[in-house]
Structure formats: C-alpha cells, structure tokens
Length: 73
Image 1 (tube, rainbow, N blue to C red):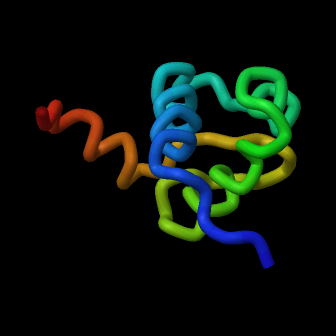
Image 2 (tube, helix red, strand yellow):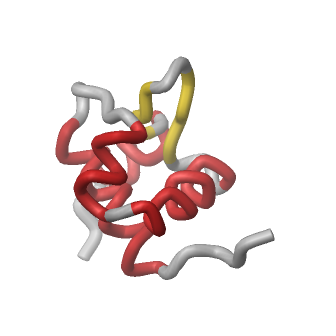
C-alpha cells in the first residue's frame, strides 16, 4: 500500500477541483495536469471526504465547497 500523498499535491488537486466546479474532472484531467503520482491525492482526498469520484467523474464534496466559501486565510 502506498503512503499518503503530500499536502502540497493534495492542495493542488483539490484546488483544481474547486476552481473547475461546477464542471467535473476526469482521471485523465488529473493525470494530464499533475502526472500519474497525483492519483494517490485523489484517493486520499476521497477518503478524507473532500472529493467524490463516481462514474468516472471527480468533483468536490459539499463539505469542501462549504469550507471554500468561508475564505479562511
């Protein structure tokens, strides 16, 4: 089993998903932007409840969108 991805990579992947919302991403979008290694970040973010991956589409969860709205520093 692979270890958890770095916070920097998770932040970049989640940032992309939030930026693109309401458009959904595909695994190919993630790999094209960040490379194959970033796929672990998708798995980690899904496990943490921040990304949802269903039917080949990736999108931020309601929790991630709500947190983004708070505009914390």
